[in-house]
Picture 1 (spheres, rainbow, N blue to C red):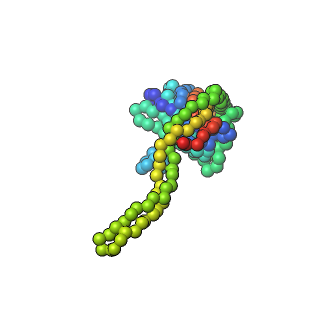
Picture 2 (cartoon, one colour):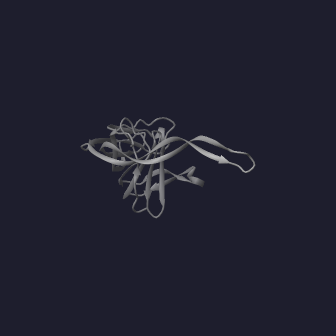
Picture 3 (cartoon, helix red, strand yellow):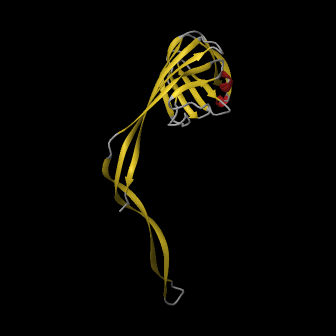
Length: 211
């Protein structure tokens, strides 16, 4: 395995529980390190491997509050599950501490995560929109087999294009993670991971009627 890409997506604001967050960085393996990787059909099994000392590109992806995946990419993709039966309680700010017992891996994890949130100024604008309208429409129906005609009325739903006033700003979330992988119950560091994630969201402050 030469370069490993990504180290799993992490948290939101209270705890690390939101999916689709990815921390990208480097995994510095200081001495040969054992780990259980995903294997078998649809990656439903695990297989223990030995990762040799090197500096890897890595990605940590957050699948949920109980489930993370460490991805190493080289001549083959290596996916290391950090999965627990209980909430791992990884905070958005503060100490990260995960026992090998909780994730069924031959290492403990300890480190720190820092999350900074900043907001842009408010932007006033007009944007396109669609709105749904219901109209009662009547049709005159005349049939050859009948004398005279009748009027048939029914409600019809349609969408029309419009414009609306909006006010919004951008929220930028910057996450920085530093964790060490330790030998089980020993103060001996096997590897160190440093990674970052930047997420920009559009936050609506006001939304007028579509007209």
